[in-house]
View 1 (cartoon, rainbow, N blue to C red):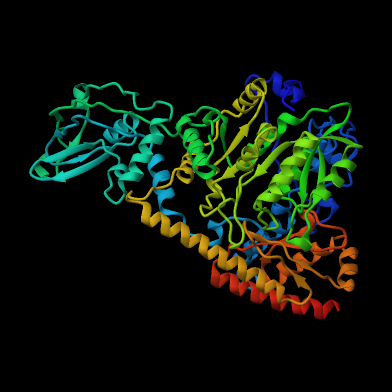
View 2 (view 1 turned 180 degrees about the vertical axis):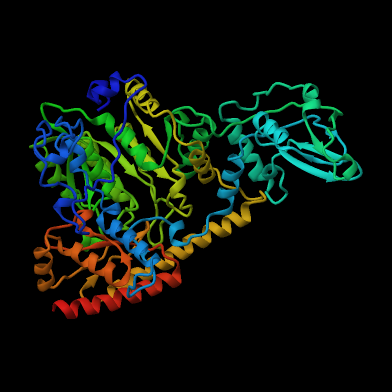
Length: 636
């Protein structure tokens, strides 16, 4: 699997160009909020080379459009991403209707469809926000001596402000009324000098900023202001002096200004000091060495997954590359495989055994897949999304042995590693287990992924994540670095937030006690809500829900009456989709149908988060219970 000839040919050719397609995965047809085939595969789609005969696909002069639905990338048309599908679109429409005063049997929409902690009311971790805010300052200024200009009592005109703003962005004008007005050109940013910010926060921010382009050696040139004295007009508050030009007398100005820019590009794999901190975090977690050069920072784990996965797009023996993914699975994988024109090899998790991963099922799935594809990758999500299970060490050992037997590259999606709630469960990283197993297993190619969007942090919008890719052929690693360089770099603020996750306050530091209390408080509350959700659904008629051992979701199974199934068929909807739409329209609760994640034929599920705050979650579950009773009564 290490040969460079088996990676995407276009990646070998790229120098500094290329794009990864992004799509929500949905094509909306008409105005009905229906989740059916028309959302993903419009009936007007034919060959990608066939020009449309419809009038709307031609310009007013009769010439064919360069891009229409008929010549759109067919892989994009195949993409589906249920987490942000038509139910979510309808939920947003309902929110707007509520804002306009449209009467509904509920007052708000609860978007339990997605794992967005802060959107559900979780308060950000103070330490993370303090460091990221400090890093968002444009400049750090150090001045040996930046004295003031003495003038008569007056105010600075807009022209002076404009000049200063243009030449020294970030400086603030402050006024002191003590005898003659002292115009203070203050060169210290408020946040880094604010006593409310702990010293460890400030030190971390300075370390990160020093790693940005410009570092601590960038020096702005001194500017002689004496030449603009007569052009600066200050108006005295005294009537006798009003409107009279008053020259500024410069006392001293000897600035030494050090500049760090978080707005500059970083190295494509990320800021070196943060990559080193990630490696140190992995070493503390696993007790085994980690090479910082194997760490690649990214705009969320999703980007990291796609960056590595696209290396494996290479048909072998006229067969598509195959990727094994768990069913149910996080739709990122099915959407990305469709986009990359790779073959999805689904292996079912065993719901009756707490969503366990059975090796016999892996063998069944790969045997069938070999007839039409060349299996190259196995994806394992641990803790599980949407199923909430946590793999034990013995199970991971079995998976690694299977991957070795079948010569598979392992993708370990471990973004929920902090979210383990069951007392009998413990997170084990694939890297640690693989390394402890020794030869030949410790030579298996492995990419593991982490994010700042989940865990106790929940910083979804700041887009921070990392990949650790080990046992790569050096030539392939060069290709990987070349490929990601085409996207320039992940956001510097996202990288900074990832640093706060892997390099948190330590005992004895000013921020430690508050950080510890906030982290433990979040995880304790999530554990309580995980239990509340599973217990509640298990009390519903026709429901069964496994224990939520980890992650942020429950994936209950429900029995849908035959009458409701026929109603769904008449609307060309999947039964679980029909149920979810009815739930949304009658209660405002938005969940994701199980068919969007994959499920065994004849079974119906949905995914809901455990993230609404306790009181809101309790109300949501009560409303859910009332709806379900009415639904069963209507379709019995």
